[in-house]
Image 1: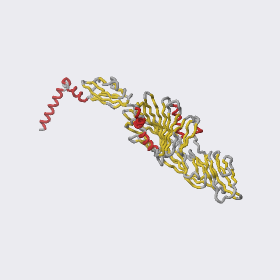
Image 2: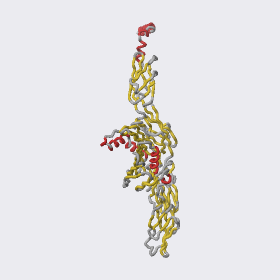
Image 3: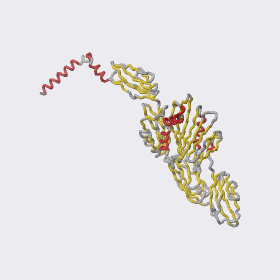
Image 4: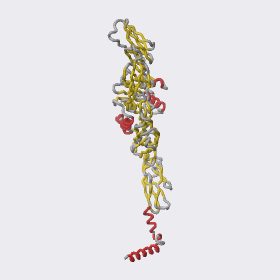
Length: 503
């Protein structure tokens, strides 16, 4: 049996050797080649202005390229395709009698929500890839050059892991968008405990941040804290000074000791204000009042007036009986008034303060749990600003949580729908020119900034909006103008930075 098999294989080998010279002439090579020719594309979806190259495998013969619609997609003689405008076209490669087709879709250009980002160890933030004109969020592939510094998940959420810098990359449709991320040390108070004598001061500070905290005192009659964290010892006792940063409270325990053994009471009075001191019941008869500081005066009725920051010992004398008060004067005015590049005035509603230019009109000022202010910088133009704030949290959420909520509420679709609802009776039709969201660094750290440009009845409008959460308050600040708003934008950003909460 083995002999027959060996003989049969030998015959096949001889036949194949005899036929090999004539197989090409019979067309067998062409058939094999044609069956393996294929068109390859790295990307079939391109953004406007981008390009890629198509290739044909399985042949070395010349390929002829063509596009079904050059208005959308162009192709050159080497298979390089260029995305011209939003739409689609079919690219055809003609070779060896075959026509190979590849559909190319062109979409709008993208933008990364920001090009640089700073966060702290243990803190989170996120990036998004948006359509340049529509603002629509796109799905991208995310990566970090150094995940040990900053890790990014598949949705663009970034977590600070260790001190350093890295680059976060979003890849979409063959293009790459990058954001430089700096991770600072973990946020914490430098001083956790303080002991101060009455009248003494100490500035508290945080490590890991350069922007402001929201400061408060559990008992201002023991220790007062200014907007920038300077603690002033007022009355004997112990209390907590709280610095709130990015939704987290950090506590410093402050103990205040007596400045002198004969001090019997204390009082806190703001500069420019007056306060009546209360005597004990055993002080009878005519009382004589005196102060050891000419800038902190007291009337015959025991009313203290503070002209400047400082302290004084106020003495009440009735016969041989004396009662001494330690009075501390503090400044509660908005410090940004002194820093403003223009003439300003302070607006105060409840415990919220901010600075406005003197030339700006303020209308519809109201305050209970809400504050809604219309700003009119120029009565001769369509320029209009708005500052709206309302109490929405008992404790401020962290920036990551607040920004997630704001990005959703401030989407292009929601903004456009609000515009249409407000003008539904007028049959208004809006045309979107551009929409962009990203981070803006303020004195309170990052906030969400939205820039929205549209046409209305042929007129181009630009609106710039800022969304901030500060210690339980949500702020919405906007500026809308029909012309060049560069100078006005600087002004509105100054207002954003001047906001502070004084509890």
